[in-house]
Length: 453
Ligand code: FAD
Image 1 (spheres, rainbow, N blue to C red):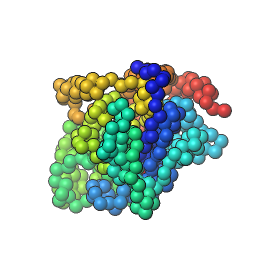
Image 2: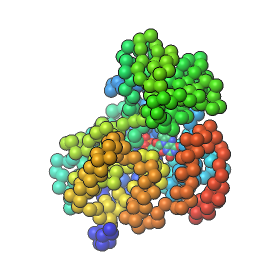
Image 3: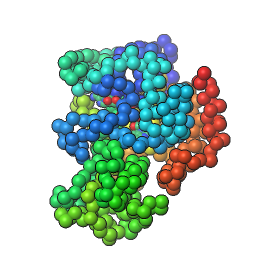
């Protein structure tokens, strides 16, 4: 619903993070007329796409005192989406004359270069305070603000704590990324198992597993990629998956040393790993490719924003009703097309903050959230799937587009996705280099011609 133009307001907005989400949020907020400061703890844009050889001192990343590494990208990583689907809607991710990797599913360096070009094109860097970590976000004491918009106090430290700032903002948009705080599988007997455990957050290159027996837990993109990467060096790779039947035991085609199992039943102090399918192996390493938890260590909302088994109480995965619209989150929904979704979410937040677009009442937003939770409970769906969109993502994007007043997702983008998802499951070795959707690629490039000089 759009409000009268006379009520449009410019806000002083803090954006936390200069990854893909923070960059596009900053652009959309400024386009809407807000004044924007982006806080970024690293010294460059791009977030998780800033590949580093460094890993954390604690390979499982459970020690709260460990120095954190802010990237989860591994050396061999190529995108799991084709460029056409992956890029922002009005800044297509096409290969350029200076591309590092012109392939349709390029390596991580090309994604970083794309985000750097985006930041340059839209002069985002002039809004960013680099090497500045937000350490606390809390409601400002004199929180009156303008019509229901509470103000926020932001405490930050710059350049290894040499500068400490304490400032007040009208609104905060949280874009701090969700691939840093690992989730781990529960493995019975693990405390006395003598092998090495690690999380995929700390995986970079396969050579370190030469001649070892490695168990990879998980079935999502990272598990699929990393198991194949490691199989090139390891003696054996055994993939343990929750989502497969208990009797699963499949030799992976194309690999002489890789097997798919059901989940681990138990591990023992003699180094053995027993799977639910009854098979037992002796392993050197267990790698958890088991995803991540939402984590907002800087956020103090008196218990309003919580993370409960990866469920965050948000209206449309963005606004906590009682703190809306002055607090919002980008990128919480998953199994999505991240960059285009960030773009739509940013436009909606920007329009709501200016008063151009109105939100339902806090009560109505809360009712919608509670109804959704009741449905999950009735269907027995675990809380951690609250923000999973998958097949429903396009309905969500179209809903956002209708609020913003822009066009919904392009048909070619929708049509491209399903075969890619299927290809990823059926032909993980080939889907990045063999495809049949040439007609959709042509349609995409026709649309891109609007934006490419
Ligand atoms: P991030 O990129 O993590 O950026 C968050 C930023 O916030 C970081 O720069 C961080 O330094 C900063 N920050 C955090 N806390 C603070 C603080 N307190 N103060 C100041 N700054 C802070 N997506 C795709 O579209 N295609 C793919 O092929 C793909 N592959 C992926 C593979 C892997 C292994 C991973 C981990 C993710 C992949 N993704 C992929 C998803 C990817 O994470 C998103 O595309 C996107 O880059 C996330 O952007 P973000 O801005 O939300 O988070």
